[in-house]
Image 1 (cartoon, rainbow, N blue to C red):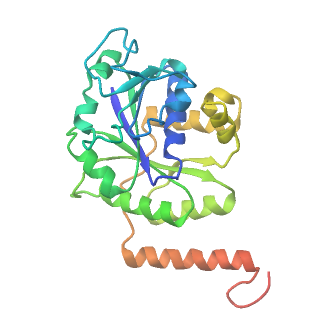
Image 2: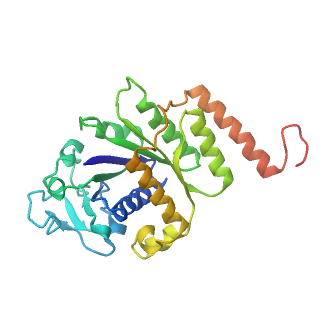
Image 3: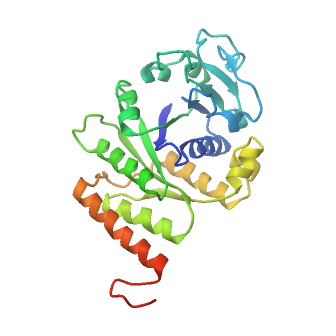
Length: 279
């Protein structure tokens, strides 16, 4: 089995990307386990529909096990759904190295284990540090300042000799609302020496699926958005997402890049170019 971590700033679409990737992999015939770490235990919600979670995995593995602190179910495409988030009153977070070796996952024999872990490098990378085995990390980013800043911070962790060495899976550009946002994210990735695996467009089909407690892959299987998730799944399987070794921009370079796009954005909004001529 291979473990894939889908991460990025909270709010950039990490969970939406993770569940639809899981669904797309399952649709393509792969055996998938999807793990969420949110205390609210909502990561697997769209995969389970309205199906309940059961402690100690219930019948998810066709047998009982002793992992009583994890809640599990079988969801869309026979995906093993596991919620690892601790209860609100608990003060001990799950250990990633332990989670990777859960009895219920080993008995399920998945081809891919998808880990949905939103956050910034300061919280995510120390959590992953002790696992001791190769894990591909995909960073989800949208075209806003906070998301791109978090992406830049994550890219620094893939440099040789970094404090938290890990395998770069690729960047996933999410919620692209048009050519401007795509150009902005593409330009940042060029500066960082990489490029997005896929560009996932902004679509109300995401909300439509969520209202029906379904992934886009299930609620709108013929949509363009579903085809993008299928493409992402194929790239993951073929290991074609990452391009080279990314480099985070240092403070001065990132500030200069931000100034450039501040000027471009202002020009587009005001209809003026830098010499003062009207467009």
